Amino acid sequence: MRLPIYDTIDKKQGGGFLKGQIRKALSGFYYIQSEGELYQTRARGNFRNRKITPLVGDDVVFESTNQTDGYLLEVLPRKNELVRPTVANVDQGVIVTSMVEPNFSYNLLDRFLVTLEYKAIEPIIYLSKTDLVTDKATIEEVVTCYREIGYTVIAATTDDEAIDELQRLFPERLTVFMGQSGAGKSTLLNRIVPELDLETAEISESLGRGKHTTRHVELLPIADGLVADTPGFSSIDFLEIEAIELPKQFPEFVAAASNCRFRECMHVNEPQCEVKKQVEEGNIAATRYDNYVQFLEEIEKRRPVYRKKK
Image 1 (cartoon, rainbow, N blue to C red):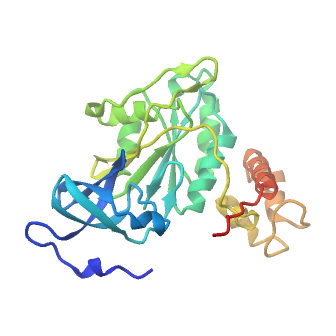
Image 2: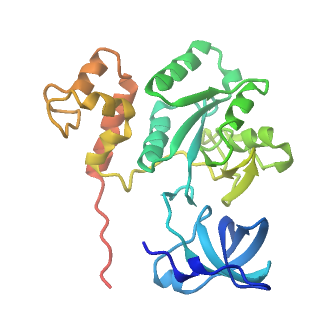
Image 3: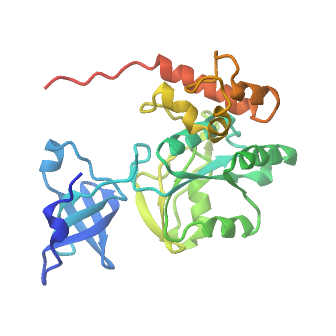
């Protein structure tokens, strides 16, 4: 993608073209951070014609005569983007996963991990509500399972040790918080930066999950980095990933696949499959493999999306 002509134009006295980053999108306005100042802008109408939707996290070119009246002109190339939540140029994703209330789900956690792997976003697993778990061996099982794969896993503590460990990962990175509703994302951010005073909600007894408390995406400057607090949700559909791509989103499968008989082994029906062998030997977690098979079936049964002809 060629950079627009605005890329070569410097800031002018009293206005002109500027580069910045979208920090918040709300009610049709885009709030852009540039050179230490926050500008309120609206998007030019040609974005809709070009089928471009500016996202929080986008690097952009805009023009402004003052901080409350500007126009977003161009979205610069992205390295990635998420649909749920709608954020661009993400470096790492903190998956806040509750151990209880709502109960821990290997399946849901693996859905988040596959989504982040596919978008080349580094996953960080944060286990919340560990103090409510009576059988502490359950926590250790989860921690061991994912650390052996190579993931960063942080288990919540009653003191600030886990918070400090998490904050050390923030500097100079754009971090997205994600996870099922009621897992404690806003509660966790409130512990990190109490002055944020983000709204939280109790778990719905009838649904067994939390209410959505965050209604827009906003990048918050925290610990020398940027953090997005995003709406929680309890399910992920694989709408972009093709079946042939799915095995590559499981790092332990990738490591074993070189010893499979077939180069593009799908690790289901093929003979002499190293992944299935390692599952049988206990070197690859059975929960991960079972989830992989389920995800693969979902993708293969997915209805194709047909675009309307113009």
